[in-house]
Image (cartoon, rainbow, N blue to C red; front, side, top):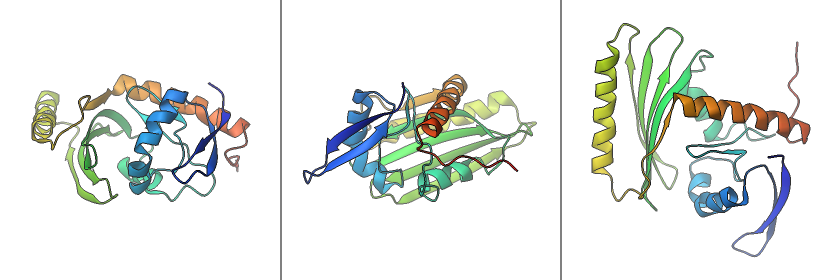
Length: 197
């Protein structure tokens, strides 16, 4: 879907105009979560990509320092060979968002990370465990399942569709969609061109 311009009225009756390429239904879903996302450091605009398991924003001019983008870089350890493997995300309306994020690294190790963000944007938990390349995959997956089940059972009123789970195939599809969105955003003049040396 190509970028198009939409206008919405905010809570004060002011008109806001955005360039979007996601469906109207996805924009409406974003509006319902706008305050929470803004408090957690996401760009204050609809996402560039909306899939069944993920929303993704592409950094436009002036947004590079937002926590959404800096946290993403930190998540991968700025390792170009790092790749997402699995994630599970739970939401409690008006309260917290909890994530289990599994990232693979080029050396064969895995990083298991648990993050808890409050609606205010405060991050109260950010714990990671590194599994070495020679770790038994069955043991690693069992430990990850235990963490996922414990969070699922202990939640303070998780939304009915929680957790939202993404696997490697979902991340591959997301990556392809982000590439298309970046090309379309560049063509639409929303991104600064990348300089080649």
